[in-house]
Length: 80
Image (tube, rainbow, N blue to C red; front, top):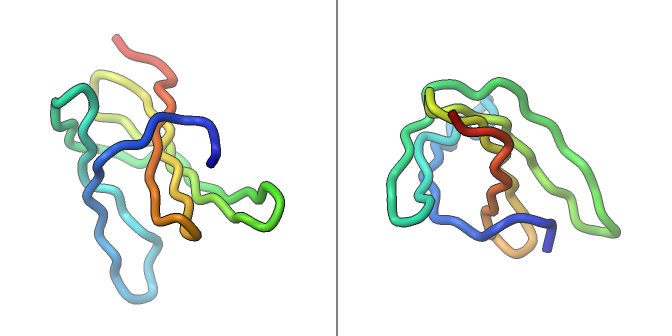
């Protein structure tokens, strides 16, 4: 698994558009995503990871999706 803490997340899958994270839970608190500032992919071994840099207006977070294991994880980048 890519570095990060596993989380619960809600996303929207829409035909012809990239996946859009809507909210995630961290420490039993729901954070509504107000903006995805950047998204990219990388690969470690045979596993491709999808990354989304998002903000809830109070912090900047990297959300990481492992399509093989169907697990979302988070890395906290900065909080106010």
